Image (cartoon, rainbow, N blue to C red; front, side, top):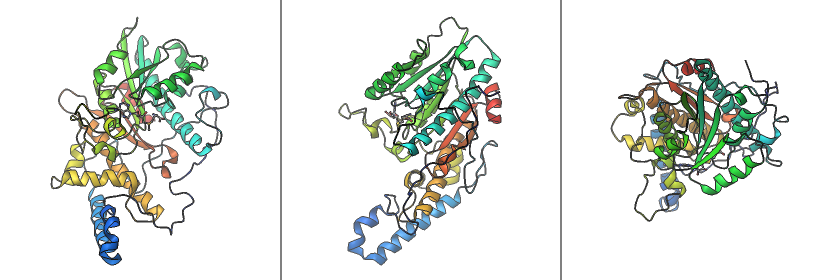
Length: 395
Ligand SMILES: C[S@@+](CC[C@H](N)C(=O)[O-])C[C@H]1O[C@@H](n2cnc3c(N)ncnc32)[C@H](O)[C@@H]1O
């Protein structure tokens, strides 16, 4: 049954990549296809540059074409066109205005943020329902990995704590984790305006790679018999989304709901030289030594070992910006195709887990306006065979 805070409001569209730009306008994007070409075009003459660009585009097209669905987990689909849209009810934002992410004057962004909160809240409450159906004496910590100033964490904490919410009587807390102290200060200032119960929303300033520190922040289980965790993460850049998955594994194989961000940043290896600012964007989003790409055997086998890293790099860059130079709709189509492969790779790594790790039941969906906004894929997972996995299969 749906929580009472939902009302049936029609979904609204949002802004689009390249909106206002005619499809006849050619976009020049910094992809491997044209980076070198742009710098040398004048010296080589337009026709040679065009030929080189054409050849690179063809190779990238072939690379995308070579990746098929064979070997994917049965719960994953490999559509030609789109990742299936996640269906979720809208929230009555008038009633919940205190946690409404809408900012006057920024309606397009606001509608997108609302949809993100609605999608996460829908999946999260499905997970919580199945956790509390199994055992009532349990405390659940929802970890928002890479929470920033709290667009997701503050809204979710406010909705869960609402007096009319069935979750207000359950022992659920939100732990907002980020490396950026200033963002956490803003989050705390926002949550101070809400009348949240004590301990409902806590912050933890930590690198997502520091799983021990984050685990120690959630380990206080109070009087409860059991403690569970659920990891949510919205737009954690680069490898931070992979770290969020690793964090879920480290928290007793917790369920996860992630909406990753740009991917190419994950290819920057972290520098530990005592001089590099550990908070710099490229550093915190760069992969730690335990995270390698492709993430899954599935994608490794599709790409074959020859020039594997280079091929993955091309995919990651195209997933961020498309293949240039091209029209906006071509750009979107390539970007979405490559992003889908990158996200399937992440999910397949969870489905394939070996050793002590449990294999995960996984699903890939998208938040409805992802058709035009390139970072709307939602990665959902929970250990195979459990009650939560069964609930996720119905979502
Ligand atoms: C694009 S923002 C998204 C913030 C928020 N989730 C939202 O949707 O508004 C990405 C956030 O992830 C954080 N982040 C990136 N890498 C991280 C890491 N390794 N550890 C902790 N936080 C990280 C950044 O500091 C930033 O606040």
